[in-house]
Image (cartoon, rainbow, N blue to C red):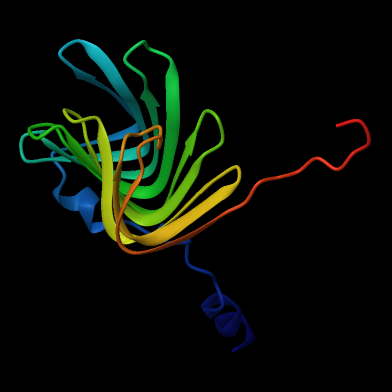
Length: 173
């Protein structure tokens, strides 16, 4: 009886969580990368930990998204990170979802739960709540449109903010 009890305590192998996307995807890529251009001009470099391709590879569902935006001159503009996203190659659009953060090269920062990127317009936008901060200013609201560098930020609803000027009180400054 003791021997039978010992055999029944055997642990089963761990089960790896899966996503239903993997079952229906046309293709799955790990460490996927897409270079987004508009008429030969580099707009963004899109990286994803995992990418699931659908609809004849025109819709890509991504996990752990990291997108670097570029100025028309080729200089780095800003970096977007999110938990997941969708890239539509037909429309030239991307939607980022879940803990979306965009940080510009000079320190402007935007956080939201959902954001769209239009490749042709080179514009980011959202209908969700957001918080935008930059040195000396904070803006929050629901919905916005902006360039990826966040220099032309436009709040759409329930907008409120604060601005302050930092004064250096050190002697001789």
